[in-house]
Image (tube, rainbow, N blue to C red; front, side, top):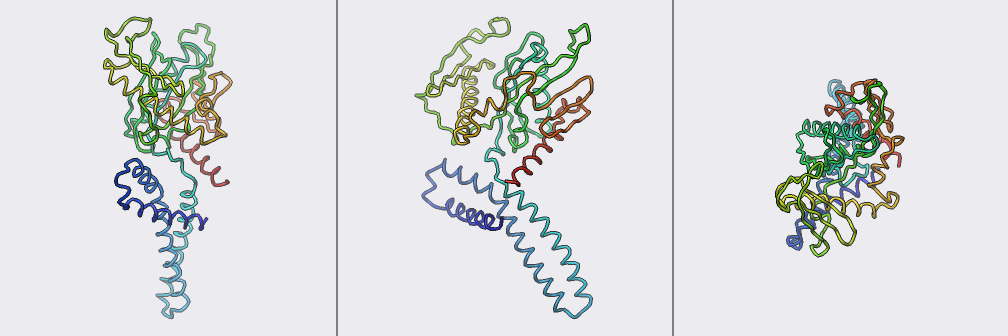
Length: 353
């Protein structure tokens, strides 16, 4: 552990020298990358410095206890030894956590995609409730939520919604929400009182910055057309809807929520950039051959990461075996118990490696 820590401290010093190199001034993209790495590593370097100071103070007090003849001074040294020993042990635990390889995307904003899976209109209604719950969670954090694309049903449900959530650490807190969410309840239209099971799929992607992904204009095919709402009714008299095709990969993104063609194009490019960045992450991580599909599965009822059971007023996360009997609170944005448990589990698993 200590060899790794010393290497990271040296890396911080190297990055600081790099940022002051005049040759870097003209390379904005590289400066952003170096600055990001430096800000990620600084907490480790600062903790290392505090740990070394505590270690020196402890050695001084141990020496004082051995050599001091004044009873009061010896007593003071003993108290300091106890305090510093506890402080040193606490910092060692913190250092172990800091040395866990960090997800470089943890501090990023996210794109969250929520889609109705199995269950027809009931799945669409729950997709709308789940999106509202994440919006409330984000609001409680002081984060901003911006809808980039939405497809609604005629009964208040959502077939699909793609939104940007902007806030420090958004990806680190919400990345575990990816997967199939299962809901069990009696639909309002069910006269026999039978419980139906429906699913909603959630995908969470880090927002890609321009320095993360370079998109060449010549690789894009941009089509414009008139927006249409539920039932095919025209909701726009101008060609404001935008469809962007990334020719090299075949990725297609479409936005039509805004009346402005420019705004729809900007939103579509945000989605495209994040999907391309996700594809690049897949290449870097061979065991996750298709990150997006592994996140959301097929939407089949048998697949699930979490179950929302309305008759029993419970929410169960099947990955950590945590059950909360406060369904209303969870759907009001109370995801913290699950996020905290999943984060702790990820840390424990990382420490085992």
